[in-house]
Image 1 (cartoon, rainbow, N blue to C red):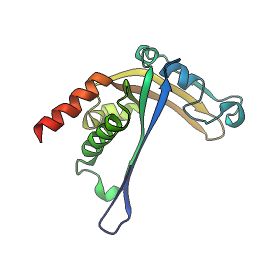
Image 2 (tube, helix red, strand yellow; image 1 turned 180 degrees about the vertical axis):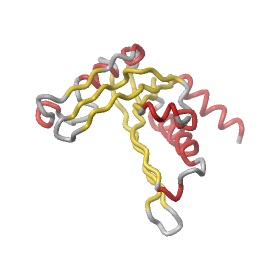
Image 3 (spheres, one colour; image 1 turned 90 degrees about the vertical axis):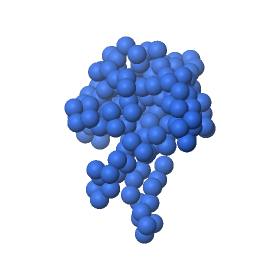
Length: 163
């Protein structure tokens, strides 16, 4: 999703993708590096690694909507945009895909600063993604965040009833 300002300049970007993990789970998907590369055998560095120890990640399977990176231009920060955009993305994900799970990865600071709560993430676990990508010089240790498909449906139904 892309949001623009009155001058048609990009003010925010938020990414989502649907994974078919009917024969796998989110932990395996991360550890295979397929969440990061179209074809890890071709594109990944031999020393690239991802470890996922979050217990729930092994239960996240089926149609999985991954809500990824979010960027908000500095002059739009502090206006409640993350809460609004997260709600829109949840609604779009439900309408397009009706997923079994919605999940994502979040830096620990987002929990400490209350950003996860703004996004409406009520479930989170440590060990979601301990990632090392050599060429990109990335070393992360992110939380796993998720909603079940039933919880997503309930959020969308509740928003529909309120309007």
